[in-house]
Image 1 (cartoon, rainbow over the protein chains, first blue to last red):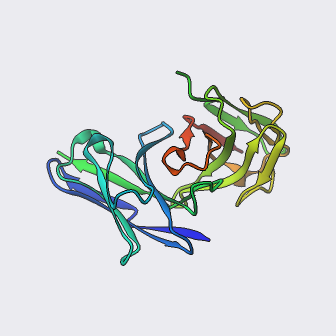
Image 2 (tube, one colour):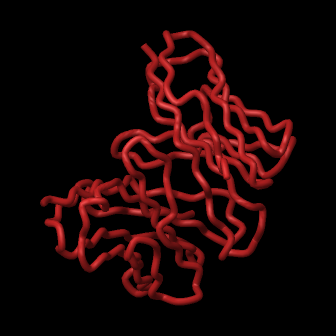
Amino acid sequence: AQSVTQLGSHVSVSEGALVLLRCNYSSSVPPYLFWYVQYPNQGLQLLLKYTSAATLVKGINGFEAEFKKSETSFHLTKPSAHMSDAAEYFCAVSGSASARQLTFGSGTQLTVLP
Amino acid sequence: NAGVTQTPKFQVLKTGQSMTLQCAQDMNHEYMSWYRQDPGMGLRLIHYSVGAGITDQGEVPNGYNVSRSTTEDFPLRLLSAAPSQTSVYFCASRAGTGDAAKNIQYFGAGTRLSVL
């Protein structure tokens, strides 16, 4: 079984500051990890994914995440926040490449202050 | 490209009413899923399908029925709506492949349902 914990349901940063959204996972098998973003009144869009090819994963819109097995973490970062980054972010885990569903974290609402 | 299309976008029901949430995808994906999103709980899987004619229960299936008569469509039925079913519902699809690099779910824009 897999589970995901996102630390901090709300995160606020100033425009231009570092964005750090935390995700820790639990999995009995090597995990596949994902970050999704949800803008207001929209569905979820994939930001990036980890599928064991490389531990540092680059995604869209300048986001990246690093898989750290020893810490069971997959934190999402962006060096410089932009107002358009304000959204809700979800970390998700899948137990295998052929897994039929994702297990989602509870989400982190990112606010970017001018 | 339409991707995953959900209708309606908004719906208000009275307790006990029935309705069907529609979901269609034009990517020839084998796997389709329904999730509900509630504040502070992320997305929880209701039902999923691995292909036409095959469905299975997810984490929170009670009160919902699904069917998959075609590859493209995966409707979600509420037989007797309850206030606890007030939520935002998302349909998702992905290709039926074991290739991890392609194991990406695509989501519709959601249906916001209120049950009074």
